[in-house]
Length: 397
Image 1: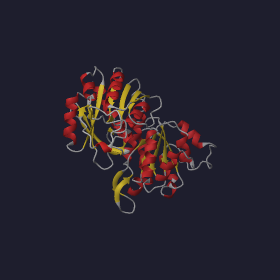
Image 2: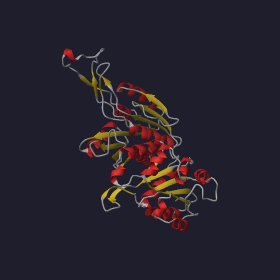
Image 3: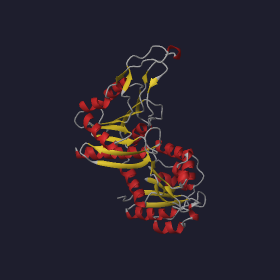
Image 4: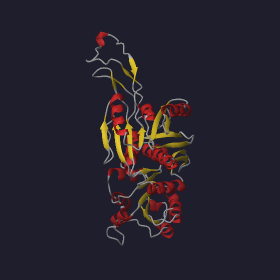
């Protein structure tokens, strides 16, 4: 329930604005105090009188034609949550750029409350790199993004971009409020990125991991109140307050993880650690004129297995399995072999999922036999699903 929580409902100018009426009603039915904020474009699709009648107070539409001389400050500072449904490409881009050009974007910039953004647009717009980059920026800043669904769009075409169902949006609002500090008191260790195993001072054996999922996990844990240690191989922005340890090789990551894991309540091995490394790296650059070199590989340390073997009581261990076939079967085998509590498995060949993307699609396998499918969503949403599963498991243990 949302009893007494003050929620600003932002509605921007898309055909899906009519669904925001149902979102408004559902939020009020759950006990929330809802203040609608409509953009000028939104009023071309829905009437402000409708929202005024259904919400807890009248709808607001302007920075300047309001009884309050600074409405965005009052709304932003007084909100427990701001949800934008639908969020058009314009609003998403404006918000990501930090531009205030109407009451809604000014309110978004004037709040420190959790923000839930629910995009809705045509498939081509949703898939445009600029839109995806803007959403990734917002997700890194802690904004909760409710990915659109696939279905019939305006104009009769079918594809991804349809606003998420009202019940899904309301559930995301509840989760954002309930989960805002639900990891306070926990020490979370996260690894991120792909390791680099040197062949010579110039070349290395590596993989395509961007580290985005690991950094999203670290940001999510920090936003939910956890103390976070991030062991990473990539130079992405770190969550404010997180302790960052930068490494390059599997051996360096193993040393850093072993040191940090002793005091960690939750360990999430999201890094793509190389399975093999050159046994004898060359001390100087290998020259092409000398012919094709013989590079002998040897196995790297199995960090996850070591953590599983040494796991202390009360510690939760999460592994990742990047697969190309038989995803569930291979992940289940890894879960059993490594002594982990949870495995996050994904098919890295699936469209929009896996390495280098801003989105992912995973299945969560618990050692108790429970499985949870998480559909394609931004990596911050995947992180939320992972930690929800972690907390559920810790409550049961």
